[in-house]
Every structure is written in C-alpha cells, then in structure tokens.
Image (tube, rainbow, N blue to C red):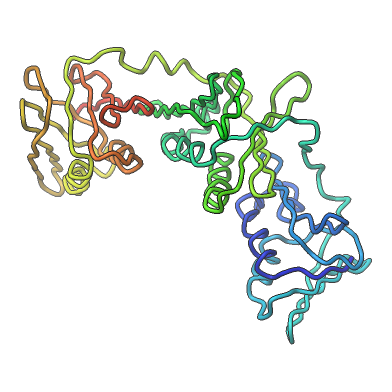
Length: 379
C-alpha cells in the first residue's frame, strides 16, 4: 500500500477517533486504527465495538491496500511531522513507513484481517437534521446522565422522534432530570415519529464532538437507525463525510414524565447570571460531599445560605420577581442547579416550587422547550 496524504487532513481524521480507541480492551487490536487505501481515497476508521467512526480523507493512492496500526501513536507521529504532505508506504510485513521532508518514522502494524467487522450504513435512509438544534439538545441533557453502572438504563440519553419534526431528549441520574424538545428539521425535511432509544454516555460525548466540528463548518447532518434481528441496535449519524455508529443500550428508560411536577404553588423569576454567580460564591462553603445550599424565599427577596461546621457560614440576598405565597425554605445540591444555569442562555430563568421536600422545576423564562427537575435535600 502506498499513498500521499495532506498532513493536516490526516491529523484531523486521526484526532477525531482518539476518544473511540480502546486502551484497556480484551482485544488489543481495538487500540488500532484501520487504514484502507482505495479508489475513493483513504478510509480512516476505528471502533471499540460500541462506538465506531468511519471516515474518508482525500489522498493520492499509488497502491491500494489495508492495514491497522496503533491509533494514538500514529496520531502523535503525524501531527509532529514538519511538512505539508506525508508519504506513507506499508509492506507485506505490515511495517508502516512515514516520510515527510527529511523525517522518517517506521511503525509496526497488524493485518487488517484481524480487525473486527464494522457496521455498514448501506441501505439505511438517513434523515437530514438541523445540526445546531441537535447539538443544543445534547448540551442541555448530557450533564445529568447517570454514571452508576448498576443502572444501565440511566447510563445514556433517551432519544425520541416526536413527529412534526420535533426531537425529544431526556436524561436522569435519579437526583435530577433534564428534558429538551425542539424542532430539529433541516430544510423542512420531515422527521418521522418513532419510539425512543437510549444513546449511551460515551456515544453522546462522541456525537457532541462530531456535531461541534460539523456545525462550525456548516455541513449537513443526517441520522438514522440500523436495524438487525428486528431490533434497533445502532444510531447512525453522518456529518462532514464522517459516519458515526453508536450501539444503543438495550433497556427500558424509566417513565420520566411521572417525575416532572404537573403544577406548582410558587414561581420565582430570577436573573440567570446573578443567580449562577451567587450559587458559586455560597457554594464555596457548602459540604464537599453534598454541595447543599439552603434557599429561603419570601415576596421580592431570596436568601442563599450555606453552613459548614468545618469551614464556616455564607449568606447572600438577591431580589426576585413574581413570587407569591408564604415563606418557603428549601435546599438543593448547588452543583446540580449550577449545571442547569450554565447550560442555558436566556437572561432570566424560572424556578417553580411546591413544598420543601417536593422536586423543584427549572426552565428559561417563558420557554418550555427545556425543563429541568432537581430533587430537594434535607440539610
């Protein structure tokens, strides 16, 4: 196999797969990248059997062929090279030789036949989608995915096509819940309704990276599902000439709708950034284990307090709008509320509350596209 490839393009392709390469897998070959030179250019792919990246880079192919080589080492070598183009040759002994200006590297590879088979999107109808909208949904739900491996149905984001072009995403770790729903159509293309699936946490993170790159370049984004054995087992996303396959979690997501309060006795409107900054300050003295901050509410005023026997106390007052009802004292994990406020963009947010031990509902003021539920604490 022989080819010449632009160093920067090759570096970007190798950078994209770094999060997929498995360093501790039972199959050592999963730490490798698959490189295949053919008529269509240079294929660069990697998988950990749960997440797969499959992309192409333009290259001048002198001799077609296939090989695999340590993906991290190749990435480190290629991005360090001094020239604009890299001349690469692979012999029958699977030794990969890279030449760039007066620099030469030789890396030991493995036969491509040893690499596991990759999923294929052929025959799958991919639906155009608004990449910015999809990225926003991910940004506003991924932070509340559970990391408790004993609850696999919470280890990802619930993804459902609601019909009429709307997509809903939901995540929860049992202490908080994030729900987003918005129109994600691109060029008025329909997004058919379908039942929800669970995208695993790692797949969500890799999808975010792909969309960050794709939407900044204003390229089209398409998605679909790979069906095998009468089950939906992979989400497929294509963006910028790269195809991402994510193996879905085979479990039932809990009925999250039961957690969202149907009504509230007390509503508070706050300026988002002052509220966020106040939580950061008062949280400095909160318990390092619980991050608990007490909130005292009365008409026109809110007081935030933390009391740590080992460190001291903190107190701050701030004005509020629209509060009606009697005084209320409630406590939340300040880190959970900060996560919500940090991911929103509106100048004002609403906090809807009932009793001291009832869940709190947070959202942007006069916008129901995104809802966030946080369970209260006893402190």
